[in-house]
Amino acid sequence: MKPITVAVNGILGKMGREVVSAVCQQQDMVLAGGADIKASQNTIDLPFSRGHAPIFKDIAALLDATKSDVLVDFSVADTALNAIRVAAAKKTNVVIGTTGFSTASLKQIEAIAKDNDIGIVIAPNFALGAVLMMHLARIASKYFDYAEITEAHNHEKADAPSGTALATVRGMIQSRGKPFISPQTKNFTLENVRGGQVDGVTIHSVRLPGLVANQEVVFGGQGQTLSIKHDTINRECFMPGVILAIREVAEHHAFVYGLEKLLHLGGT
Image (cartoon, rainbow, N blue to C red):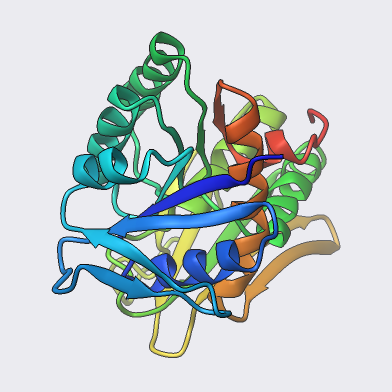
């Protein structure tokens, strides 16, 4: 069977390097090359004695040169949307690990996949444990009226709250069918101490050096609480999900939002 050729946009970034390492460990994949606006060299050395691969500043030049089957992108929403358009024009499938897409943008991306007969997978979170955490939160939402989320990330994370936290709340509300009850605080001695709120769910964002990605969903009920927590130790935890998405998107030309679809988690 012909190996899947993979290109990485943002190949010099932290997630880009993790993707390179993960791809180079697969027997059915080849790292064809990468693109990065910070590139100062023409090639990049690959781990595990896989030789080297070309690197470009321009995605179109990358895909023209490598004819890759799949483009992986872990940039930001605006950049990723441009990468999708470029890849679609080259008939290249896409795996996106970026949050922040609007509903309108997701509909546009779905149309791009259909019109160009390519596969596009977008996941707010590629960690299998995080996806299961969100799935379990959706189940629990049917049985509790109160819920809060604390999400903690590295201090360099640009946005707050995280896309995973927002996706968790959306899934909880969809499963529950109505907003949660939000306790009302009578007196505030510190402004904004209760965090932000979405449909009755308060989200608290922690940003500190040393953190990668952590989230806890706490449900409250009469005489009890239920906590569902996921801790990310390092960025390697995202790679099994990324590899799964690469294999799926290369085989099935469709638009998929959320890794739970690829894990075949039942509806709640």
